[in-house]
Every structure is written in structure tokens, then in C-alpha cells.
Image (cartoon, rainbow, N blue to C red; front, side, top):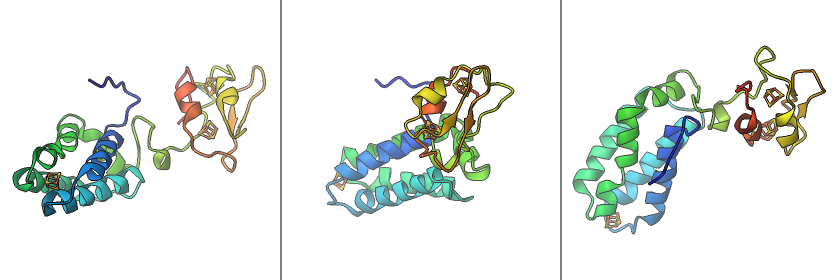
Amino acid sequence: MIVMNDQTCMVDMARFFMDFIQDESCGKCTPCREGTRRMLEVLEKITHGHGEPGDIDLLEELSDMIKNSALCGLGQTGPNPVLSTLQYFRDEYEAHIHEKRCPAKRCAALVKFEVNADVCTKCGICSRSCPAGAIQWQKREPAFIVKDKCVKCLSCITNCPADAIS
Ligand code: SF4
Ligand code: SF4
Ligand code: SF4
């Protein structure tokens, strides 16, 4: 059992499991060997901000084909993480593809890394958690991210108690 919260991106989670399936595929049958590779490419494209209309249909078509024609249980169940996230979190796929936005703020390519000064509580936690020294902060002042220094590690977003970083 894996417990997730609203900081887990369901598209990225599906990409992670498809990467695992692709690694584990023995390559004996074409649907699993090639189909999971194609699915992984589509998921990587979406999480990197290059998703296109039609990608969801393509994922469903490939899933159907793999489930119905793969030789063993690995391939037959491999698309399940994609199908179940599409069933219950389709809006997250659509946000990635159509709005170039990751609702869970996990896909670095789709996160802007800006501090909302109106929401920032001026605590300085993000500044202390930044490994790149990219966040300027002084007492009683909102934090400020120097974009040129940011390495998109997501640490500030994860640690900000006020959800002030987009
Ligand atoms: S479905 Fe099974 S037999 Fe076919 S490539 Fe995948 S792991 Fe190998
Ligand atoms: S994403 Fe990482 S490197 Fe960029 S500002 Fe936040 S903590 Fe610093
Ligand atoms: S952690 Fe969040 S609330 Fe605290 S200074 Fe940084 S952006 Fe502001």
C-alpha cells in the first residue's frame, strides 16, 4: 500500500510506474516491449510540459492494446496505474496538457518558482531549505527567489508552511 497526499502528482506517479514496468519488461512480446516504451514517452512528454491534445486518447488506446495482447501478467496489468489515474484524476492530466500547469507542483518544468508576497508569512524557512542559495529573505520581509540561481529542486515548495510558492 502506498499512501499519497495532494502533493503527489498523479501524472508523475503514473510515469514512475510506467518507467518501472518498462525496466521490468523482458522484451519477449511486442505489445509490452514497445507499447510501454511509447506510453512512457508520452508521460514524460506531458510531465515535461510538452503534452498535446490527443495524448490522453493515445494513452488509453495503447493501454487497451497492451492489456489485451501482452503475454503475461506484467504487461497485462502494466497500464493500470495510467488507467486508474485517468479515471480518478483526469483533471490533472488536462491541467498539464492544456494549461501547462502541475496542480501538485511536482513537475519542475511546469512550476514557476515565485513567492506570492501577499501569502508569504515571512518565516524564512524556504531560504534555509534552499540548497542553491537562490532565496533572498530578511526578517519581516517576504522571501524572493532569484530565478537564475534556482535549480528547481522543489525543496522550497515542499517546506513552505503557507503554500506561498507557485
Ligand atoms: S508481457 Fe510479459 S512476456 Fe511480454 S514482454 Fe512483458 S514481461 Fe515479457
Ligand atoms: S526550487 Fe530549490 S533551488 Fe529553486 S528556489 Fe526552491 S529550494 Fe531553491
Ligand atoms: S517558507 Fe513560505 S511563508 Fe516562509 S518565507 Fe518562504 S515563501 Fe514565505
